[in-house]
Image (tube, rainbow, N blue to C red; front, side, top):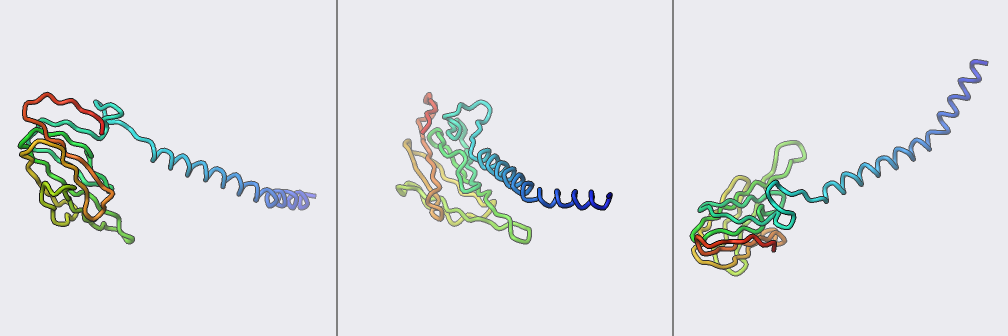
Length: 164
C-alpha cells in the first residue's frame, strides 16, 4: 500500500512537470520583459528637469564631455565664448575571457569648424577652445550615429537652457 502511494505521488510529480515548466517559462518571460522595460525608462539627475536632462549650460572655462556607452554626456552643452571643451573617452567593453577592450571614438565637427581628433582610446582626451559664438554640431567619425552640439554664447550673457 505504501509502495503504491509512492508510485502515485511520483506520477503526479511527473505529470505536473510540463505545467511547472510552463509556469517557469511565463515567469522568465515576465522577468525579462521587466528588465527590458526598466532599461528603456529614463531618469533625471537632481536639479534638472525632464526636458533638459542632457543639456548643460556652463559658465566654466573648462568643460568635459564624457564619451561612454556610445553616447556623449552631455549631448548638448552651452558654454561661454573662449571656453574649452574636453572630450574624454571612457568607453570600453568586457572581453570574452575577462579584461576589457578599448572602444575608439573620433571627434569630428559636422561643418569642419574645428579639427578632427585622432582616434581616441579609453582614457584619451581631446580638447578644443571655442572662440567664436554659434552652434557647433559634432559627431563620432567612427560611429556616425553618435552626435552632440556645442553652443557658444557671448561671455557674461544671460543664458537660458532650452531642450534641443
